[in-house]
Image 1 (tube, helix red, strand yellow):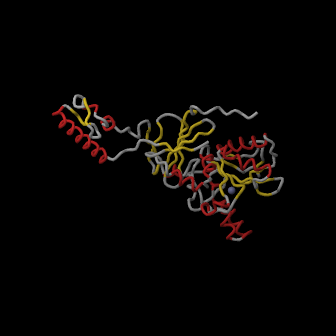
Image 2 (tube, rainbow, N blue to C red):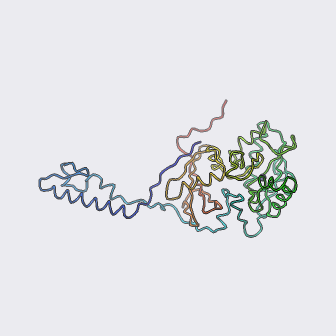
Length: 340
Ligand SMILES: [Zn+2]
C-alpha cells in the first residue's frame, strides 16, 4: 500500500488565458507578415514551409484553443451544516477541538456491545459504541482469536456522555491529582469517547489496561486493517496533549487508518496533512487490498461530491470535510495470494 499524489487540471486565471490569446495573436500576425515570401513562422520563430497555407497547424495553437476542463464536471455540490462538520468517521476530537454534540439524544445512535461477539468481553451491559465501530471491532477480535489470541480482552470503555466524562475526570483527579488527570483524561467535551468511535481495552489475564505486548501485540500491529488507530503515543504527546495510552483505540476507517500508520502520523497530523489535497488541486490516491481510494479535502460547507459511484463525506470537526471516494478495483494489482 502506498499513497500517491495525482494532479488535477486546475482552474487557470482569466489573466493567464488573456496572455495566451495575446501570444496567439502575435504568432498569427508574424505568420501573415511572412506570407510575402511564402514562408510561415512556427511558434519558435523558425521559418517553416506550408504553415501559411494552413495557419491552423501552427505549433502550439492546438493547446491554446483547447478549453479548460470544468473541475466540477461529474460532481454535484452538497450543502452541509455546521452540525455535519462535527460528525462522521474522520472527525478530530480533542481538548483543543471539542466534540460537536449532535442535537437530540446521541445515545440513540450507539449500541450495547455485550455478547455481540464471543472473541472478547465487555465490562458491563451498558458499554456501547456506534454500529460501524462494533462491526469492525468484531472482525478484528474474531481474526485475533482465530490466529491464536486468547479470549481475555475486555472492552472497558466505549461511548461516554458529557456528564460521564466529567465523572471520569473528577475521579482521576481525586485519585491521582489534577495534573495526572489533565495528562491522561480528556476534559468533558474533549474526549473521543463521546463519538462512539473510541474504546479502551483491558487484559483480564494481567488484570490491567491493554499494553499491546506479548500475544496482544497482534491487535496493536493489525488494528489499522480494520480501520482503527492507536490514538495516543508517547512520541506524539506534543501534538495530542494526552499521555501515551496503549489501550485507547479510535475507529477512523480504511484507508485512512492505513495512511496514518504508513506516514507515522498521529491523528492531529493526519487531519493537517489532508489539507494539502483540496478539491481543486491534487487529490490523495491510495490502494488497499486492490481497491483504489481517492481522498480530498473541502473547506467550508459547500462540498463537491461525485455524481456517481461510492463515496463517504465526513466532517473534520474543524473547518471542512473529507471526501473518500472508493474507485473500482485497480487494474494491474495482482490478487492477494495467501502464502503457502
Ligand atoms: Zn479511552
